[in-house]
Length: 181
Image (cartoon, rainbow, N blue to C red; front, top):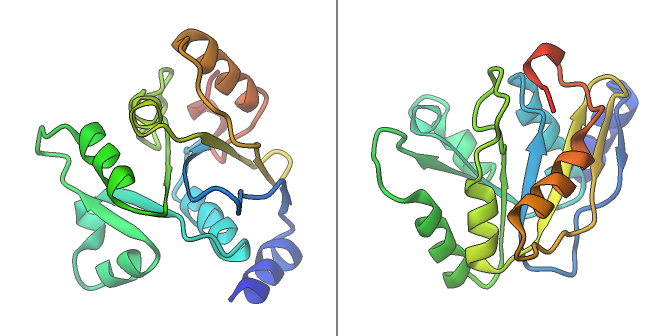
């Protein structure tokens, strides 16, 4: 699967990857942005498969219903019921604490629509679970997915968020007007 994915992603579609997902860390969060189009999911999936990553993701519960829900689960997905007001941050922190290995990929924007302010759940999960963040861009302008080294959060949220935002500045999403940093 790794070879086929690399061939399709790099050779047929002309995308390149800058950086690698960590293989020496068993727990971390991948934040993928900008998330402006449904194609972003497939870019993330291509990275997961081409780098043999056991990354997981969460998605709206409706994606996991028949007839195609089993595919999303097989690809590492976990459904989330957005109508419930349960504390998802604490629930995900518990998953990190329970598992020996857990890699969570998510979109910090929380939507594909225009959103000038990122949700901070990923930040609070990383702090609570004491895991680093790996930043991943979906740059349609350069046809490139860029991965950062693991970033360990400090005790200064403003400093951390500015560092994270800087990684994404200048990146063009599939729908550029939906992404503004």
